Length: 323
Image (cartoon, rainbow, N blue to C red; front, top):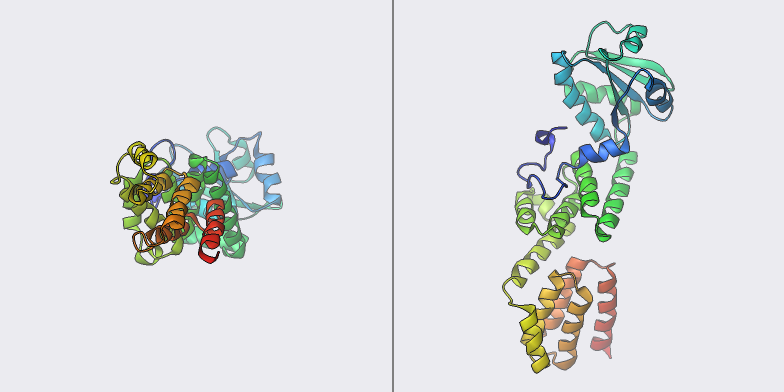
């Protein structure tokens, strides 16, 4: 799929640095095996055997065929978005003429659907995208609960990858979900988290500003927006080494401690950040009108209720508040 097919490739921020991009769907789909080329020798495995698991579309084409060039990006897009309802196998008839000859293929592009090891339906020519969707729905049924469940599984895997530091792998999966569902808030938030992890906060802010209004109001997206605000604020708070020296000289310098907590938070040192705020609370609840507690609650919003740092800090917060 070309970059122009990617709804997040332009206004939502374009290419990420490194090797990850918003348009992660083609790479992810290729890894999942939704689209592949085949040969005469591979036809039995790639088409006949595979069609016993889900419908397989075989696209017979040739490099000199103009309509083939029109059909290919459209059918690839629809197959990618089907997320495994069907698979697409492409065969170059110039290189491999025997199979299309046996099937009586006389003009191209020609697409033949195989189910349970046999051809069941097909179409010829560069048909519109809507007709391809109808063709796939006729074979596999409309996308529904199965696709939704698969998307949730992909999102869970992406979250795990991101938590383990595999930003590129997470970005590919979030991009794949966005290709299938442009309005998926979790995927949009996850993609912005990947950008932040890569240090590209400007691109993350650009993507945030380009989101539709309803999507921008989603709690997952709002958490990322607050994280970006915290990062921007921390940039203006000074040198953390100098702030630590101030604290070493005067442990009751709550202003320096609060600033250091904010900086440590955006550096990923959540436990240390929480510890500084809890220290302020233990020493002086009146500082900044209970500002340390309010700041800690803002951290919780970004970290999420299940984050280990949130759970540990909330437990310590309760002991201070209710002891």
